[in-house]
Length: 183
Image (cartoon, rainbow, N blue to C red; front, side, top):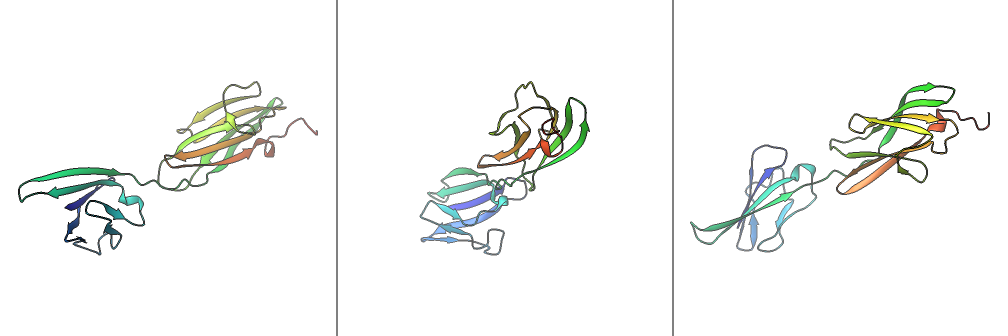
């Protein structure tokens, strides 16, 4: 049985080695997989300490004779852990009815994450509100809010997610948009 690998992000394929006489014969223990490969049993390849660039297609070829074999392909996706986002505000405009502000959800990392916004405490869908108007832009990264004074929904939450996790950050508009209470 032999194994090869084709990276998800493009690049040249790599022959990983072959399982022979109960061992994985790895042709180059100094390649990108180093000593992270081993065989659990006759048919199972294990990769320890997964890295983002380990995502791709792994092909296993089982040879029955010199001319007869069967090939099986396995697709592996490695996800970056979801980082904690942060919310920046910009373009704050005060009016007698309320405040207009743009909130921007920022996340470190190279992976694209799904971004959504919620309002209130506890957070719920933006939806329609008597106390605010919302507009999304920049693939959901920016939320333009017109927040009316007296609204109880002054907290906004940015949710960052991928297939394996979710994290969020919240921002309180009362920090930058004064309400009529206490004035």
